[in-house]
Image 1 (cartoon, one colour):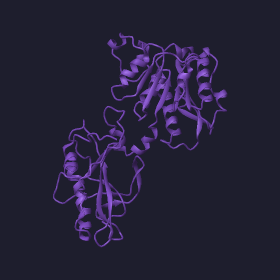
Image 2 (cartoon, rainbow, N blue to C red; image 1 turned 60 degrees about the horizontal axis):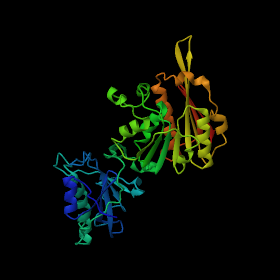
Image 3 (cartoon, one colour; image 1 turned 45 degrees about the horizontal axis):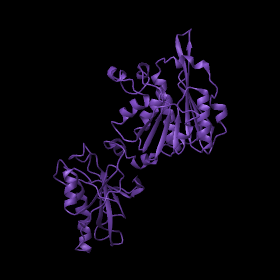
Image 4 (cartoon, one colour; image 1 turned 90 degrees about the vertical axis):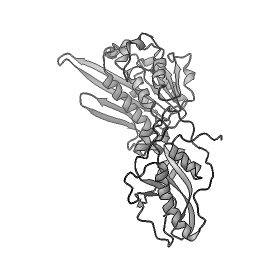
Length: 396
C-alpha cells in the first residue's frame, strides 16, 4: 500500500515531525505506541484517539479536551489507576472494529484555552502516561519515529463526513459501506431515496431512469432547481448525478428504463430500491431480483381526492424482499397496471408524501444491514397520512 499525505493541519504534522506514530482514519486522530503502566506494574503500549474535525483540511482545532484510550487500565508507577484522568472505562467500537477501553478527561491547570491545537491536546495525555512509565523504564518514549501508512480507503466524499464523527456513529455507519446499490426510478420517491443514500458510505449508487428532468419534477424532488437548469433538459439520472456529484463520487447514470432487454443490468447489486409506477415493470424487476437473490425494497404511494372535504387521502407502502422472506410479495406488490392511481400520475405536488415514502424505505434498508435496530423484522410497512399512523406486517 502506498503512503499518502495524512493531513494539512500544522499541529498534526508537528506530531509526525516529532516522531509520534500518527494516523488519521475516518475523522479520528490516532497516536499509537504510547508507553504506560498496567495494574501489574508492567510497561505496555496503548493508543490515544480523539475526534479529528477537519475544516477544509487546514488547521482545524479540537472540539473538546477529551480522548479515548485503547489498552489496559493506565496506572501510576505503583500500579494504581490514574483515576484523575479516567472519566469512564466503558469499551466501545469507534471505527473499523477498533475498540477503545477508557475515556480520558483532564485539563492542565492555568491554561484557559486548552486545547489550543491537536499537538497540545495529545501530548498533554501522552506526557502523563509516559511520565509514570519512565519511573519503571527510564527510556520509555512514545516518539518511535515510525511512519504509519494510512489504512483508510480513498473516501467517496469530496469533503469529510463530520456529522458521523460528531455523533460518534462512525462504526455504525460503516455497516453501510457496501459496493453497489441500485435505484430504479428517479421520480419523486426515488429522488428522495437517492438524497438519503447519497449521504451514506455506499461506494457506487447506480441510477436507472429514461425520463427527462422536467418542470413538474422540480416540485417533487429534493433541493431547488434553477430555470436555467430546467432549460438544459437533462435526463433525470444525469441531473441527479450532477447534483450529488458535488458532494461524492460513485454516482453512476443509466439513462434508460429497465425492461426485458436490459434486466440483466441489475445483477450483482448488494441492494436495489424499486420506485416505479408501472405494475408490469414492477413485476419484471422484483421477480428478477428475487430469482437472483438480490435483496430489494419496492415503494408505492396512493392518493385519493375527497370531494366532500376537498382534501387528499394518502397512503405510502414499503415492501422488502430478502432471501429470508419472499412469500408475502404476491399479496403486497401491485403487479397489474392499476389506473386508480391516475391522480398521483398527474404530478400533483406531494413532495412530503414522496419524502416520507423514501425515508421509510431507507430506514428499512438501514435496519436490514444493522444500522438501526429492528425488533419486528417487518417486510411490509404502510403509512396513512389521514391517521398519521404506521402498520408493520409480514415479520421475517
